Amino acid sequence: MLLSLAAFADADAVKTVAANAIVTKTSPYSVAETMNKFESIVKAKGLDVFARIDHQQNAKAAGMEMNAAQVLIFGNPKAGTALMQQDMAAALDLPMRVAVYADKAGDVQIAYHAPDSLAVNYGLKDSAVLPQLTDALNKLTAAAIATAP
Picture 1 (cartoon, rainbow, N blue to C red):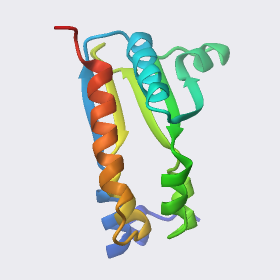
Picture 2: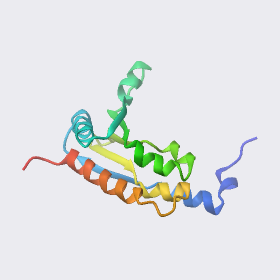
Picture 3: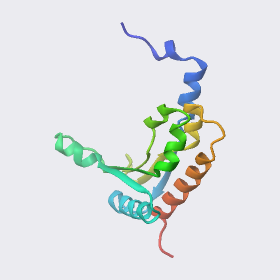
Picture 4: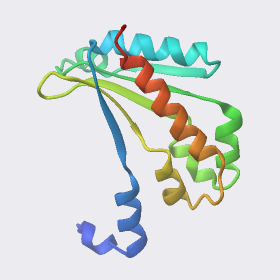
């Protein structure tokens, strides 16, 4: 039996979908250069890097083609733990992830889920961590795409 999405469209589900804001910034560099810069900055700030995934390489291995796309999974276990202590389901979105990809027009984008969406999706209350994550992701991604003066 097939069910439509409308069958699940209660107020909470709609709010959750709407809360999944994605922040996207255009990079003047290639996907690899942008991700290399981003990963270097993340490590220099003392954050843990858990994985770097090259989706284009994985597609090639499967006999398929796609634009360049990489994801870095990184974070600070202390910050993530504080959020998961409020709702363990937040582990679905932690550690943080940043994607760098070439869009359909060939422009390079760096993107991430806005940390504030975690508050809505998981009912996190009074978290000092989320504004810190928002500020950190904004600064880290801006630094990765900054051009030399």
